[in-house]
Amino acid sequence: MRTCWMNGSFVDEALATISIFDRGLLFGDGVYEVAAILNGHVLDADLHLARLHRSLRAIGMTSSMTSEAWHDVMQSLAEQNAIVEGLVYLQVTRGVAERDFPFPTDTPPTMFAYARPKVLSADPHANGVRVQTVADWRWMRRDIKSTSMLAQVLAKQEARAAGAYEALLHEDGVVTEGGASTFWMVQRGIVITRPLSSKVLAGVTRDITITLAATRGISVEERAFTVDEARAADECMLSSATGFVLPVTHIDSQPVGTGEAGPIAKQLRAAHFARASARSQF
Image (cartoon, rainbow, N blue to C red; front, side, top):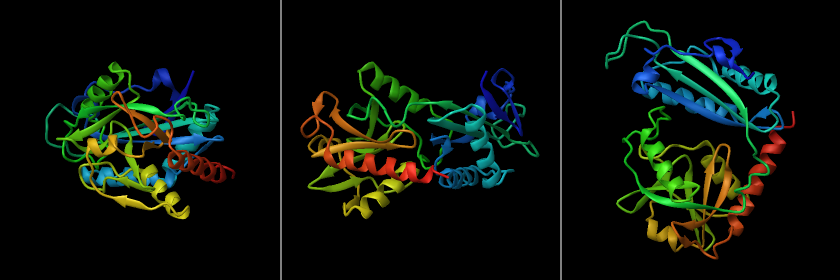
């Protein structure tokens, strides 16, 4: 039985339940984070927890737990569940209250977390994935890591039905991001991704990728680009907390570049694992 964490206590997963009146269930009124576990250690918890606090502030909440306390919970879950490679998920909602749209007063938040194994270092998708273009129908505060994710569910299901690994979201042909990832293209050796705004999530792995590229002399440009530009790029890739960097070999049915994993994507993926392995050896 998996051990989870619920409102301050470690419990068996069968006991980790919430009320039908929880605002996270009724309204998607909450935020979440996902971090990778490698070599038994949670990666970049500080960066993920900083974003958690930003998301909470953006929806008018403050955390009743410090980042240090959250990190202890995350690491404990990895250890109690004996996870060598995997992920830890945590969520905070506005809590339990009678169903009404305005915020309730003096309602304690609902907080929970769990960890599960996932193959990271030997990811079968490391040699490249296909993405499917899908219109971006999400709301206009995508910088908040909200639990309101029906639009992403529908987009990723459309991609899955088309035989693709991920949805490539766009607004009138202009790329925003992946369904659960940051999207990048490479032209003439320059790595290009959309600049941060309320229309995209500030990916933790995105920021790390930019830093890793700079340390390797790879130029990065932050600008908007179209699906057509991505299709014509030398290579494309995705980044996410548990995917690190994955090469994109096809957009819809059209190959990107040679139709194989590109050299810069492979270099940056290797750089992520080198960094992660070094950080997890403590």
